Image (tube, rainbow, N blue to C red; front, side, top):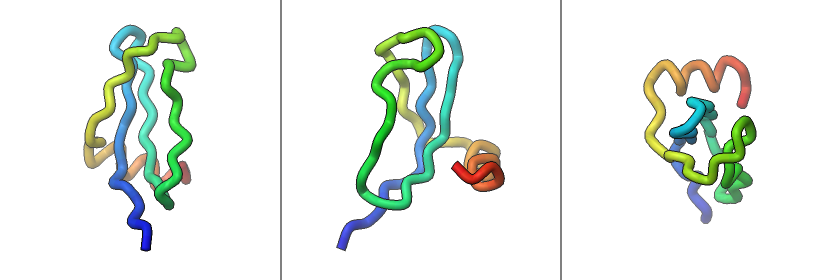
Amino acid sequence: MPVPPKPFTQECSKCGWKHTVRPVSDVLLIPVRCPRCDNPDLIRRRPSYFEQVWSKLIGK
């Protein structure tokens, strides 16, 4: 039985764009480049408490 991954935040080191993901399954469709500046160096980190709550409120 698949276990969904833990929530994570992707952040661009160049322009500061960030996006928190709360996966509901083991299939992930995440960007590999920043959608704002096209930077390929995205940082993947554990989201803060505020980011987790905010992603639940907006439904992403």
